[in-house]
Image 1 (cartoon, rainbow, N blue to C red):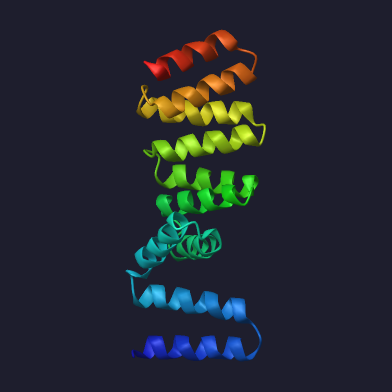
Image 2: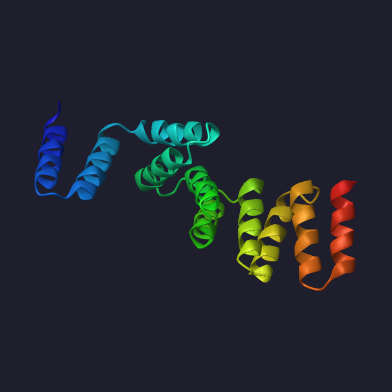
Amino acid sequence: MTDYEYEAVCSVLKLLQAGKEEEGQDLYFESVADARPKLHASVRACALAAYRCRDFEGAFRFAERAVKLKPHDGDGHHLLGLVQRRYDLLTEAARSFRRSTHWKPQSLDGWNNLGLTLEDLGDLDGALEAVENGLALDSEDADLLNLKGSILCSLGRPEEGIAAYRKGLA
């Protein structure tokens, strides 16, 4: 154990003994992440595995930890957003998807899920903007085109909506 790791463990133990469990856990993970750079990838992999096994509580816990360990990871924020949607935490999910598309702007899934979440929140203009950002990357993406059709119809623009649906089906 390095001096750094020893000091980190002592600090964590002090917090735990003082009844500050959450702070102690945060410090532990942050310290380990500094000492072991591959930890983030392992934590995110655990989040994804839990999500795929439909253990959404575990996925939520690991995804939150993953974005704390590496705040600039678009994939981690995307996964957290997916779990938040499962719990109907739409405002939080929208925030996560925004972060995801900020850090990984080439993600079509990120733009699609941001659009879906904003649509569910009633922010149709924001949803349409997210979809348009995704379509700027791939103008033929069927999921984005179908979502665009839905949003345009909800905005009272059925002709444009039907055109988007048709393009998505082509």
